[in-house]
Image 1 (tube, chains in turn green, cyan, yellow, blue):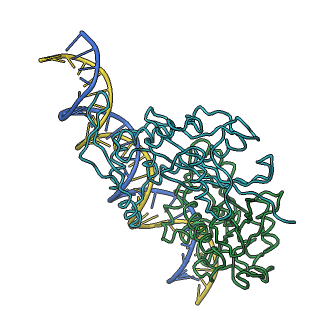
Image 2 (cartoon, helix red, strand yellow):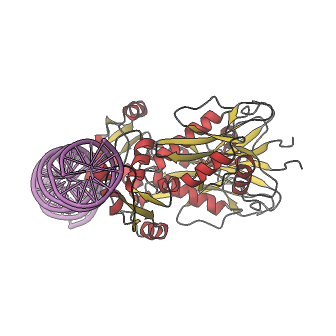
Image 3 (tube, rainbow over the protein chains, first blue to last red):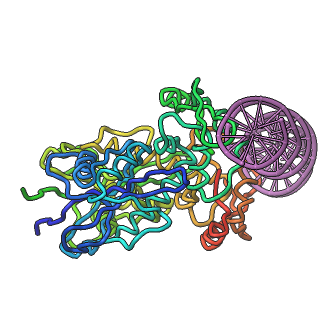
Length: 225
Length: 225
DNA sequence: CCATAATTGCGTAATTAAAACACAAACATA
DNA sequence: TATGTTTGTGTTTTAATTACGCAATTATGG
């Protein structure tokens, strides 16, 4: 018997806001099944495109957003996860910086919306499962790989990084020990630039040095919180 | 245009031998493409079976081996990874205990063979990529999840565990500190049984207590080397 | 049968990393 | 100019890791 299985890709895209809150990008489905319900963006893979190309293409079509970081998450293949037919979904998670995050939300409000991950609507298909897995992965991964920087502006004050970690990990972080720890890796460049937000001493801006990170990684020096 | 993509599953199955060496299960391909070359076992998913079911079925058919542990690894979807047509492969990695390992090798030598991961033949398709990713995953994962026990007999002496870790991590381990660390988690039951292998004081046997592990995990006590 | 080598089990000391906390500097605001 | 707020840089205390000593228990060789 001929195989009749369709392949789709879906992406859980995260954004960060220094309110602080972590958001995920959802679209409202236009067609059945689950018409009018919220879902994570995605779609079917074309015959000659890579999975990553399919994800970028669908994201652009459905939301207008370009991700700054993309990583494969897990493949969901339960035989009945789609009521129409057998569809397996290769799920990814993506991260976007605040500038992308804001522009996307402003210009494509019709197409897609950002939701606080602690205040989500019901989701279509098994998308709640996918989203839960994505959240778990991001939470775990920021502690042993420097992906958190992909959620911040290229130039950021330390307090942004600290708040991001504190929010995602769901626990308070000692500002001073956190700073020492991160700086000890030697992966951040301190810039000759400061930013002032309301009261208080202006903060120095930092930039994540990706080249240096890979060099240190190859030398066995690991990023680990 | 109709989507025409086939879905296969492949499994990198690991076994451990206290020589010490880590082995992986390969099959010799009977048909083109890559006829006569070594490959990791796998095959196409049937329309109404789950991905996991497909893997267990293919493993039984092709090698007669039943895995003691199975986990999804990654989905490989490069458009040209299969010369016949577009095929995406959902790859898994599996672990088997020494009894399964030995029986399988003895009874199905025609069908499949075990290879030392440090002495592998050339592999078909992109299977070398898959295997590399599987090795990386297992190496990393034994340090933060207790999956190493799935490569040992249910009852094992501490030296087996130590050699397994030392072999996989590729570095010497202080026997005494390793023992203290593992025992401090409280996930091992010490048995009233000893085993003697050649010279030296006989070793107590231990058993991994899975229920206790999950209980401790839910209390926030983590397995971490 | 005894000395020796090998392996296990248990302990303690030295070193390193993590956590807790004090305080001055630099700004906004009133 | 006084006050509150946030940042930057320490030090002290505590916990974890690493290094290592040594007795117990067996197999082996003479």
